[in-house]
Image (cartoon, rainbow, N blue to C red; front, side, top):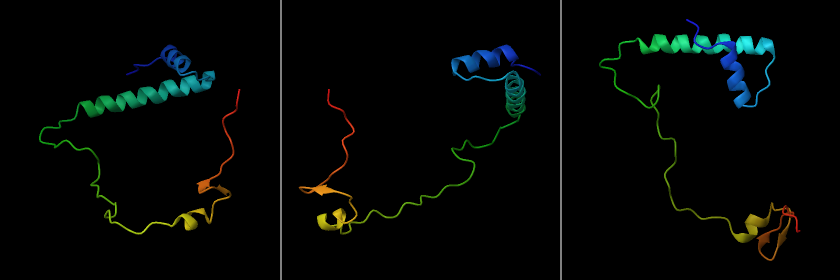
Length: 98
């Protein structure tokens, strides 16, 4: 079942400021229709008794415990700095004056 036509693809491409060749428009029309056909198949599935889920696979928190540790000293922090001035990292100016 073809839901999206070439004219629709051209309209969406124009809104997205995409410049597609005729071949790309034809390919995109076919791809988008395949996606919508698959969505129609999924919509027809019986999902009674299936619990909703946020992810397809189980996830575990991989974060480490938040523990207080000693941090770098100011001297150690500046060891790899390209330039330092008066206790601050010195970086090139990126804002131009008027």
